[in-house]
Image (cartoon, rainbow over all chains, first blue to last red):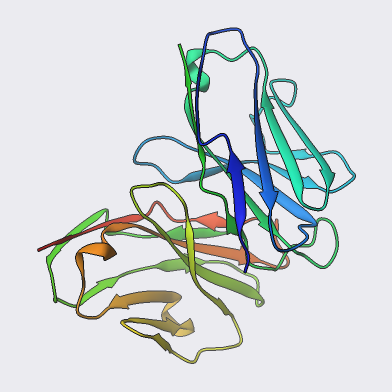
Length: 120
Length: 115
């Protein structure tokens, strides 16, 4: 149980294009999903918290207009990197937690396999 | 503020050796949760264990064991008889109920098990 999938696993795009990454919880309903970014040999940096049916909460310094998050259902959240530039190249990882109520997450987060984005 | 410190950046051992990965946390909350995740070269974070602040019992799962000591704010992870497949980056993380409710990660410890 507790499987989270991410698609695509790897994407290469040209500068200026937009890229959408999907995160799905396969065997449980995720009230809350999280998006992280990880640079080489570094820890995970939380970008935003996404609650089903409501707007995402972004961390300080993360541009909400650049990283669009949609959590349309209890099993799907998407991250769209708009007008991507080389500095957006990174490893993006999502996680999903069942949670008791939106914004109150004490459940274990299960992580997707990640998406490696390369912007040329 | 919440903080997790993994002082060991990299550890290298020979197969069958035991190895302990250290984790020290900081929080003022009385209710919190500690986690260990494994990140193999493929990149996916694999959940290993979750422990809440009211349960100080040590846990053993196969070759893995965890030592939770509230007195020293530590949650150390030991792999017994290490194997090459244990090679990965291991992250310790903290989640507090009264704080930001966000998972705070340590910087990770890269474990290399050589044959």
